[in-house]
Length: 119
Image (tube, rainbow, N blue to C red; front, side, top):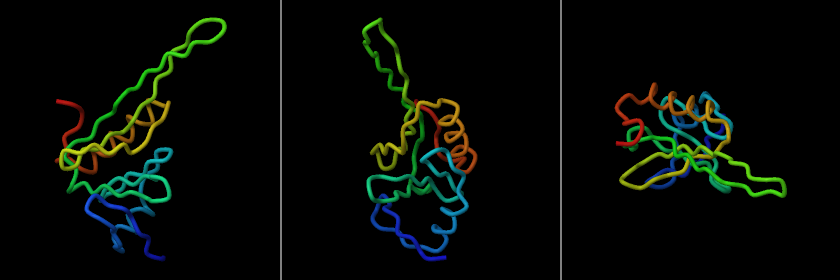
């Protein structure tokens, strides 16, 4: 297996253990939760947020009102937010609430010291 480069919070991460964890990580659409951290695509990079650097993880709900010719419709988008060093990282967005809650539950299971939810 070739070593993969990841964009971490404190710079580039090139590590065999992290590469192996990425390959074995549980997939939630475009978010991957492994035993060492959370992985997601950000442009042309694959980001890696280590659980040891993470302070908090929560879901942010963004509701949008769409106006159409025949009325209005409301859409909800769910974002997985990871907080490291007081900075928020948006790991991904989905319309599937159950999928994003499952990703948050996987973070809670693999990183019991990380606070889940907002204050």
